[in-house]
Length: 619
Image 1 (cartoon, one colour):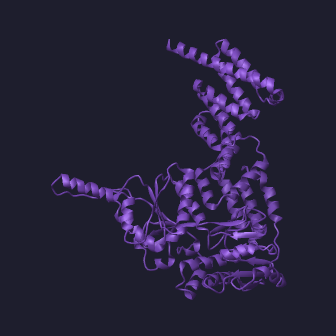
Image 2: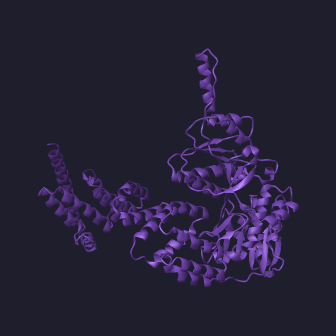
Image 3: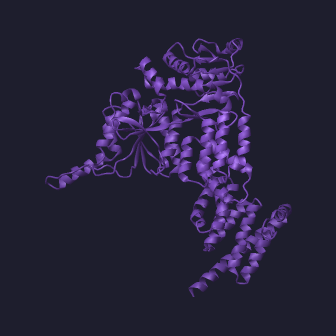
């Protein structure tokens, strides 16, 4: 009785649905004859039937008590709507018949149709929701895997999730019989668009054949600027990976590398503030450039004081000195003045980001923005499956920018927004920490309990348990005050909360005085300021002898200067191929399509009164 009622109910719903569909189809036939004919001509795979024909078939099937067959015809009609670029109708039809579908095969078919339809409507969030629902259904339906992974790759790329997009694309390629070499070239290009920390995330996902890709990436990143060594290592890779998909692009990759060319650079102008308030910063960059300058180099360096030069006549001056390349300016105001001069067309490595104009084609920015570091940290930590971060941040403008960037990046991967607490470096710091961890509420509850129970009680305050990580954005001084406050306010019987920080919290100079209170703190940092062998040791010893009291900020500028000179010739190669990396004092450097040199930083951790480099893997 119950089953008969369900079948009758389904039939009535189908009759109502099919009636409205046919009426809409007839109306469309009258007013849009050309569209109808185009739709029929575009019909694919469904025995050449148009949507209107499929709806008519579904109606006959339903009238003959064949509701399952009618539903199948409607699913095919929805697919045909997508095939003929009518996504709105496809979404409406799939939503209409979804309540009547209970077979997993049909449910999956509907969700994949919806995902394609939403993608055609440029609503990639809705497309992703459909694919998320489809994921558990794909596990038992291998025949749909190829379509599923292809859709996931396209949607995740559109949502700006390049790691997830490549993971899906590699699964898709593994299921494809005949892989187009053009597609493999696209995969290679997209792999090299990823930063090194993103490649580490992709490694953790372990897509098919990634190990071979990873080996080829290592060769390209490390030897791409050396034609002979690149060719040697690629041939070795080919012999060891004869069955790998990337073999289809190896010949083209070798030919492209052998065709790389550089212009001989003999005269370099370096524009730095060598007088005025920022003279010490300019001199630190100058000293870094000179430290990178080899004794046998035929290139001539000409230093220009940006506080003394007239930008309006600088082009004429550079031309008269036969300058081939420019490093600088360093200060933002001078960078803006420089790029706003139309006559300044020489290849240039700017040491700061402009604010007022677009870069010219031959201008590259060396970015050391703290926001880039926040993106790397948030992205990396979110993939360690933390759910409820607490951010303890200073109130100043830079710290607020870093904090907001971290929150924005975190929100891309998690529904839970980080809680942000801004802390003043004064007597209220401990109270702020206690309040953010709900320790003050615990103390209030203990006090209330003691008022009720008039007897001695042995008590311990409890911190909140919904926080699973803390990220600090503050100066070394603030961090050295905050970290002990956090430690003493974590209950002895509670699970330790991991604490992370930006490089602003780290001071190699202050570390010499001791690091005991910072034990367990992990932070991002450039190799130059990690003292565990990640830096150039001989240069570090010379640097310490010459400038033992140099501040951390000046150390960073010194490293910037060193890397900027080392990059002069490599930039030309980076502009021709996107796989070349520079392993510098400031990080692993790559060039983006926007002409920005970005960095992957290392992770350090305070442990046993020292700083040790660590690998931050997904958990």
